[in-house]
Length: 256
Length: 256
Image (cartoon, rainbow over all chains, first blue to last red; front, side, top):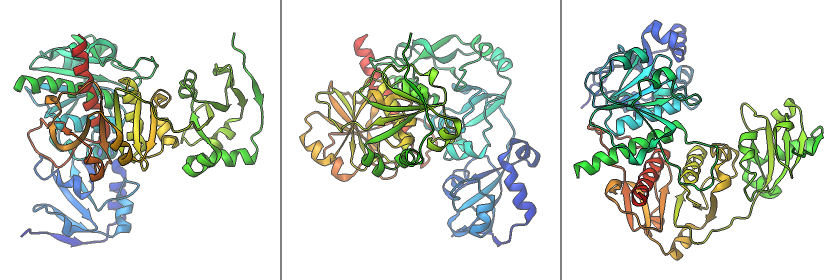
């Protein structure tokens, strides 16, 4: 038996305005809040360190959170506060956590100016799938709490620590090998990866910045098998999938 | 020196209406035409078997096609005939090719009801990257000539043969091993692939149909390394990237 605290309320104009402003980083930081939409993703927050302030829901009986205040709202209200074209069932208002760094994570991803929310979301899902605990982001990487990123992670953001920092300063103090990804690096399939390392992915259009590149010990790339050469490359989501798949393939063989 | 045939014209209302209708399969088949947008992607058609009827362009001097009639149009006209939110420079009106089958392709992908244009586009880009010459699609797979698919391929559609067919009838006559992808199959990293085979990806929501599954010799899946179990899985684009990366990793090692 699950104990629910359900309040049926009408959202005030002030609340609606505040929630609507949370698609902008400036207001997320001002109010120290961000939104997570849909029961399926909200459920992923249950065992995470994330603190939920309120859940607004059109069907509160479908949510099994013990400790969170749930307010029943009307579909017309949900439509006002949702950032989705097709609003789901619920919106959770969550507290922005502090920007913290995990020490001693064996494998880390480093993002140097990734801009597309879908790409960032995919990379977080991949990290979650492969048990990578931390992603280090340059200060200009798209914000994790951007609603498009949060939704693209499908809830995986709750299980991967994302740390924003000045990348140059960070890399200067990082002691394990740093690998980078580009179009001309060493063949991924002929690369050996150590126990502990970081792997850098660059901006979608411009790649890895020279200042970041200066810290990279080995660039790697995915060999092309197609005979006809085209100017087209794989996008960063596809590259990240293939490269992480290969790294964990090698780990898998080691564990066999 | 490149010879250009440039005509400066005003598009007739009839032409605009015809071109606008080409986002629907019904009208693409009626007129036997489809659109490709942007000089960068149109350029990929140069060495392909695709036949371009006309290129409408706001900057025809940037196109280096010898044989195609190029008509200069105004940006306001481009906006009317483009399917993109931000129209690019040119729109090529191409003839729908016949639905043909390539014999004896060593590795094929088979799509059983893939619906999302972005996923299909990504799979075509992957096939192109890895030199896979053919993708077999169930009749209900999203249409290759859907403008969203064409744009998502970034031009790779010009180098991969896509054949639509009744999948059950097709598989009944196919003689090489058929692998499928699901959440419970054999560990991808412990799977050996033969020289010739097909690999099936199922619908985003429902997976592979039972009728298709009955032809599959071996289901494979990507092992999860993350410790915390979540209900979330990888999407078909990510799965296809990882699985193809692994298959070609093994080929790469074989060629070393």
